[in-house]
Image (cartoon, rainbow, N blue to C red; front, side, top):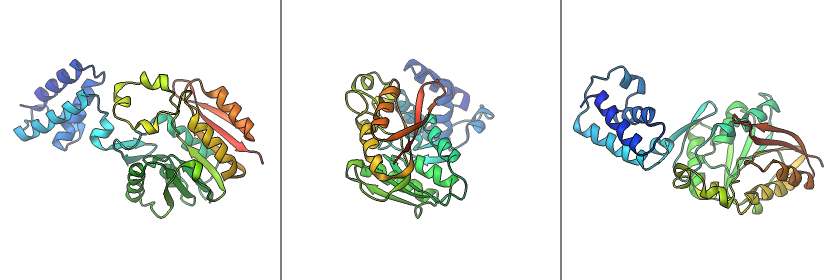
Length: 281
C-alpha cells in the first residue's frame, strides 16, 4: 500500500468516527508511523509502506478514533515558542494560556530578576516559557500532582532550566514560602455542569483534577486569590486564567482581598480569559 492509499484509509476511519480534522490528523499520524515529516508524506504519495509500518499506522488511528488528543498520542505539544512533553497526567497547553506569558513580558524587561510562583504548574509550560524569555527570573512551581510535577521537571531538564525553577509537590493552601513579585496560574475553573458538556477528547483523556473546580468553578480561583494576598509582595502581580461567565465574580473576589484589577484580557473568541491584578498593600 502506498502513502496515498494509506491516507485515504485513515481519512475513512477517522471521518466515520466523527473526527472533524480527519484529513490533517491522518497525515500527521502517518508521518508519525513512518518517522517522517508531513511534507515528506505529501510530496511522495506513491512511496509504499511495509506491513509493520502500516500496522503502526493502524494502531495510531485506533487511538485517535477513540478521541484521544494528538498531543497525548505524540507526547508533545507546542506552547509559546517552545515544545513541551505532555501525557495524560497534565493538561494539554492551550493558546489562550499564552496570554499570561504576553502580559508578564509586558510588565518585565529582559534583565528583570523577579521571584515568580506558578500555581498548578502541570507540564510547566507557563513558568518555563516565561523563564526562557526572562532568564534572570527565579521561579517556583507547585502542583498537587506528583505525576504532573514529574513531567514539569522533565520539561525543565529538556530546556536546561532545572537550576532556575524549584518544583514542589504541595497544595496552595499549605504553601507558605517567600514573598513573590508575580504569581501566575492556569487553574481549574470548569463547574460541574459544564464539565459534563465537555467534548470527549477533553473529558475522557485530560486530568479531571486540572479541569473541574466545584459547583461554580471558582473553588480553586478563590483559594489562589486568598493565598496570593499573603504570598505576594506589596504591588506584586497576580495574573491568572478564568472561565466563561466568571469575570464579575472573580473581580469581586479580587477586590474583597485587596487587589486592584489592572486589566481583563480577551481570548481569540473575545471571551474574558486572563485577569491582571495588583496587590495593593
